[in-house]
Amino acid sequence: MEKFSDLISAGIAGEIFEKIRTLVMLVERDGSLVSWNSAFGEYKAKNPQAGNLQECFPEKERARIGGALKAGVRENFVAELGIDDEGRTVFYGCSLFPVQGERFIFVAERLDSEASLQEIVQRLNRQVKMFQVESESAKKIARNKQTEVEAIAAQADELSNMDVLTFLPNRRMIIKTLKNEILRVERYTGPLSISVVDVDHFKKINDLYGNLAGDEVLKHVAYQLRDHVRHPDMVGRYGGEEFLILLPSTNAGEAAEQAARLCRYVREAQMPVEGHNLKVTISAGVAQYIPGIDTWDTLLTRADAAMHEAKNKGRDRWSVAK
Image (cartoon, rainbow, N blue to C red; front, side, top):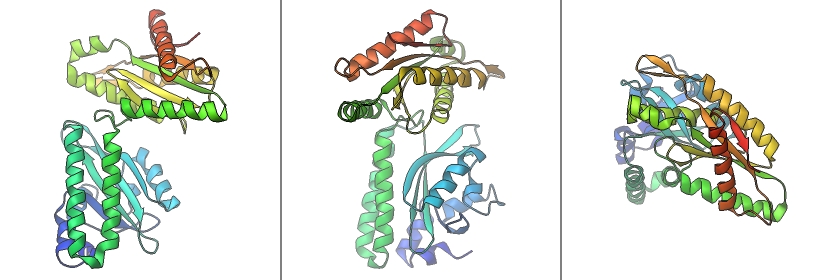
């Protein structure tokens, strides 16, 4: 393995890369590991057989990493890197960007769902300022360092629009996107539907198992929704135990088919709580945007009413707004 600090720069710049807790590595186009800093070395020691970047991730994340490398463009995303010593799922904010030749720099910063989102953003912004000052005194690595500054700044911006518990777009971001989708429909026509999804009996879960178990249920449902919608559908946390799904170019019938599938996926993906499997279900309300009549908030109101209709009919089901 080539020495990481020599590949990047001599002197203070190399020392900074070795001392920060951010995982930084240099990889080939096929994902082969070229070099890495000390922080990634500690992580890789848990998986010494890993020969490329994809193998450092759980199986379900590898296709996304391989696709980003193949595309050859800068990309920011949140990914799982396994389970920590306390049995909790570990999420990292990741940035992948090309450098000279066929190589890429991969940067991963752990996201702590126990910390406040504001603290994370402030810490990332402090890193941006530190790298900007360092770039002034190390002109030889200015271009590479600026690329890293941009990647961290993009990560900070992404986190400001993210729900810290589920790592989905937060209420502000999902509503902003809904408004933009309505503007697009008004200009170019075409259908737009939404689904309001609510976790059934969530208060009972909190009362029986505690708030920490309730948080795990929300993360569990968020993961199922995120992984079982198509592109370009978007899932966000609307508030409390409610989620909002945007379905561009989709009519109410197609949205209802998706809602039925999501109910089934959540129902079948039972989660362990205090030694036994907890059955979690959801109720969903579907509404299609009516141009010239609906606004973004009336559309939400109709979908929410349909969701409550599904609950009144017995939960673990969906309903379409009139």
